[in-house]
Amino acid sequence: MCTSFLLKASDNGCVYGRTMEFGIPLNSMLMVSPRNYSYQGIGIDGKPGTGLNWTGKYAAVGMNALGVSIYADGMNEKGLMGGMLNAPFTAQYQDVLPADSAKSISSIQVLQYALTNFATVDEAKEGFANIFVNCSTVPEYNNCTFPLRYCLHDANGKSIVIEYLKGELVITDNPIGVMTNDPPFSEQLNNIGQFANLTNIEQPSPVIDGVTYRSPSSGNGLHGMPGDYLSPSRFIRALFLSKSVPTSYTAIEQTNAAWHILGSFDIPPGAITLPASNPYGGGAGGIEITEWSVVADNKNMTYNVKMFETSNIYTFDLKKIDVNAKEFQYYKLDKPQTPIYVN
Image (tube, rainbow, N blue to C red; front, side, top):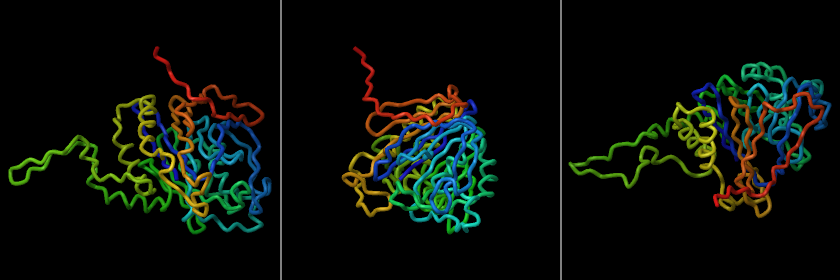
C-alpha cells in the first residue's frame, strides 16, 4: 500500500508527499547517485547488463528497497520527483522478445531510469514510448516480478501516472497529482464523482420544519469521506485533503502541510494484519506498517524522510549534492529518537 499527492506552492514550487507501506521489511536506505553513472539494464533473463544500459544525465537522491540499488522513490537535481507504488492485481508488463531484451529494463528500474534521464514529465512521456519494460523476476522479491505503477511530478507542476496494463504502456496526465494502488488510475478518477458532496467548507446546519439541527462539531463538509485503508478510499482522502490546503502557502509551508496530510495515512502497527500469501506481503508478525514517509520540495530542493521507528525527519539538501561523485552513497536512517528539550 502506498499513497502519494502533490501540493503546489504560491512561490512556484511543488511539494510531493508519499507513504511507503509493505508487509515485509524493505530495509530501505537513503541512496544518492551521481551524474554520468553507468547503469546496467536488467534484461528478460533477470540479469544486469542484458537489458538497456544507459549513462545517467542527472544526479538523484531517494529511498531504495530490499538492498537493491534502485530507487523506490526519489528526486533528481532538476526537480523531477516521484515513486513506485504496488499494483499487484493490474500491472502486466510488455512481452519482450529475446531480440528486444537489450531495449528493455526491469519493472524495478522504471523510476531510476526516469530520474537519471529526464528533467520533465514531457521528456519522460517521450522516453518511455521508446523502450520496453519487461517482466523479469527479482531474486530479492522471492524471484517474482515486482508489479508496480509509477507517479512523476516535475518542477513545472506537471504530473503523470505510468502504468503497464494488459501488456501495454499507459501514460496518463494527472492534473490532481494524487495516486494510490489498484485499481488502474482511470478507475480511480471515475470514482471521484461518487463523492461530489464532499467539501472543506463548513456547511450550515439543516433546518427542518423550523427546527435547526446543529452539527456536533466543525468538520461537517467532509462527513462521509472514507477513512479506511483501501486504496480507493485513500485516493479520495488524499485528493480532498491535498486540495483543501490554502493556495497561499509557500513551498516551506506546504512541506509542513504535507507532513500533516501524511499523518492521515500512517498505519498504526497491527491495524492491517496479512497472511504470508497476501500480495502485499506478510512479514514478521504478518503486519503491514508505514515503513517510511517522504516529503520532497523541488523549490528548495530538499528530500525529507521519516522512518517507522522514530519521528525524526532526515533531510537531504540536493543543492549540496556531489554530482560528480564516482559511486553511489548510502545513508542508513537509524538515529535514535531526538527530542528537543525545553528545560
